Amino acid sequence: MTIVQKFGGTSVGSAERIAGVAQLAVEAAGRGDRTVIVTSAMGGVTSLLVDAARRASHGNWSFDERPALRARHLEAAQALFGNDRVLVELVRDRVDRGLDRVDSLCFGLSLVHELTPRIMDAISGTGEMLAAPLVAAAIASRGISSEAIHATELIVTDDQFGDAEPLFDATRAKAEARLGPMLDGGVIPVVTGFIGATADGVMTTLGRGGSDYSATILGATLDADEVWIWTDVDGVMTANPADVPSARTMRAISYSEASELAYYGAKVLHHKTIIPVQSAGIPVRILNTMNPTGEGTRITPEGHPSPTGVKAITSIRNVSLVSVSGRGMQGIPGIAARAFSAIAAERASVLMISQASSENNICVVVRSEDEVRVVRALRNALEFDIMKSHIDDVTSDDSIAVIAAVGDRMAGTPGIAAKVFGALGEEGVNVIAISQGSSERNISLVVPETDASRAVRVIHDAFSLGEKS
Ligand code: ADP
Ligand code: ASP
Ligand code: MG
Image (tube, rainbow, N blue to C red; front, top):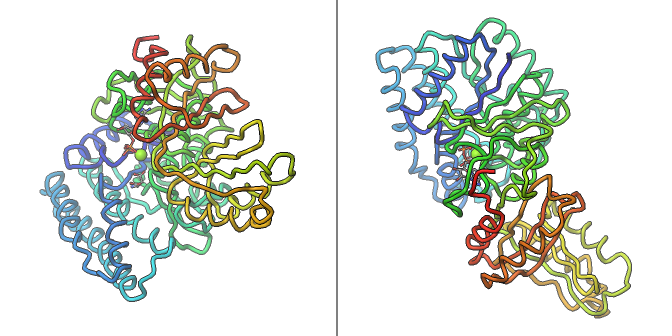
């Protein structure tokens, strides 16, 4: 079997956790699996690098985090294989080189005072380059050959820095050529998650949380039998356990359910994770490094139908509701088309759309970081209609959250929306906008951000999702 196993930030967050990863790699080798490991940065490292880059671009070059980052990686190396001087030296060299690079980039930023997405990627993707040698050395110290590989050698992407898209044919050729011989020779490659490179070799990232995506990209290009995503919870749960303490792990869900949940805020999966494995039907498992013998969640094309129709509830925060409204909009063709083209030109993704049937208003939900740009673009694109008073104004509100109820069997099950609204109404949660996709796998609602956790809990209870189905 060829299996790609991805380990998230908590799963490689300390010497003890990395020892657990190495143990799982040894077990895979014992079973005779061809294993590719994909590693995230140690927990919290990416955010520290992002902060350092931002500060440097404001003129403060100091990279104060450097000593602590160095100590964290080298102390883990010492605890894991301190008796092997060669391995310790190798890790020290890689860590110092990675940190030197960040230092130089930050110095450059402090001079130019400008932080482009391209430089941000070069800095934020370094955390994985520090972690991979550590994980590979921990495996090697247990007698199994292992080598750290930068995904810049494997994953070819476009140049959409900060949110790059893989180019599959080019990636397949590189991944097969680089990893194939290693796997055939019984070597376990430890690949940096999150990063890739353009065809001319410029480093890119796949967006925050992107190591999950790296794993399925490699799984698809290597024709893997399965992709295992190891994290810090038992699997994909019926809600974020931080919102709903009674949330339960789901044993099996479908590709479409996993994609909807990830898209609508279930952080356990990067929102594009399922795309690469979809056409080949490669199963994905979500497993817990803290409970390695648990069953986890199995994600397959068909999943497992649930009797209630609704399987899980998610929430997305840090989003804004942008509204185009005006009585004069009625019957004027093309306003929606122009509005959506303007949003697309800003490369802002629209998480939800809702239009009142009276055509008095069109609302879209976008990420709050895109709000100002989207409002400006809409005002420009609709300037003529605003002048003619077809449109009163383009307004925005960032004090909202989106809640989504997701499940394949919602399609064709009557009464789900009534139950959702009934439950929210009884609790006095005000619903600002609603939207149901025509696939009927998802109902999304906009609620005040301050009510988001409560709304998730109420809907979770209304469908008894905390009880075993
Ligand atoms: P990793 O570092 O392993 O990639 P993440 O922090 O990215 O882990 O994702 C795991 C976290 O996702 C969990 O600890 C949990 O807090 C959060 N989460 C949000 N929604 C869900 C959900 N529906 N099921 C499971 N975890 C969820
Ligand atoms: N280290 C990156 C992040 O924190 C990618 C990942 O963990 O998946 O966003
Ligand atoms: Mg993650």
